[in-house]
Image (cartoon, rainbow, N blue to C red):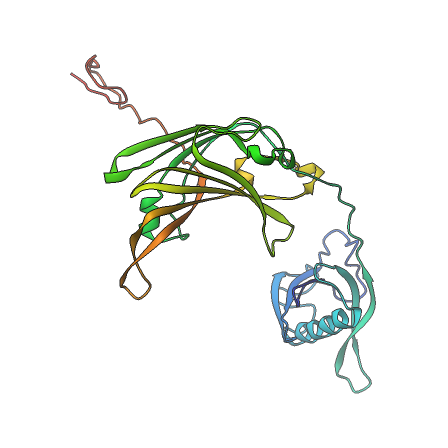
Length: 318
């Protein structure tokens, strides 16, 4: 059983009679039921798998009344135990008949499950080249996705993230995007180890992310470059955990959350929730790894010679 933010989740393992549930004999698999107990105390059982020693379609206990009653008791146990969020408890229970003949659920014992010791360290970024593109799913409206549609190529630094400081997460940056009048523009920048870059108004800041568990920070890179409506302030955010388990210390671009914002010199139009045109000065989109471009299939010239004048990627027969 685990307590999470006021609710309780439990996996109930039960078996008929005196058969063991922890060391099941061959051919005597126990019944599995998942229990969710909300903050109000109401239990919702979900059947997972049946016991192999009861008739087909039967349950070890009365469905769903016994499981709801068990869920209510589990919630009482968690409250009495004062279980903190994330704490796990192991319980044993038994269904018995009372003198009146009515069945009852009895909690026999409760014990906490020890959490394994985890060694933490600062994350280590692998120095690889990565291409990120605008995510066109449910993360923004079509107006900001169109204006902030980019293909961004980064040469990431190699080393501990907390050692980069003002240098930021990457040594080289290249962005292909739309400039004024819809023209295709490519903005490039090189950043040395001291944090100096050959792009206007370059700055790097580390901003703690409030309410993030485990604790994380946003590495914010800001600079000025041409935008769809003239010079704009570009802000590239990468969210990274402050510390990770030693076994998960190596990070790539896919392990970070990327966000790109454009602050325009003049407000830009967008369609509001009330279907009325409005204006705003800032567009924000998510970034994710660009889709791989597969080579175009080549059609075979069956029984005929291939033309040498055919363009690359196409087949022309004669």
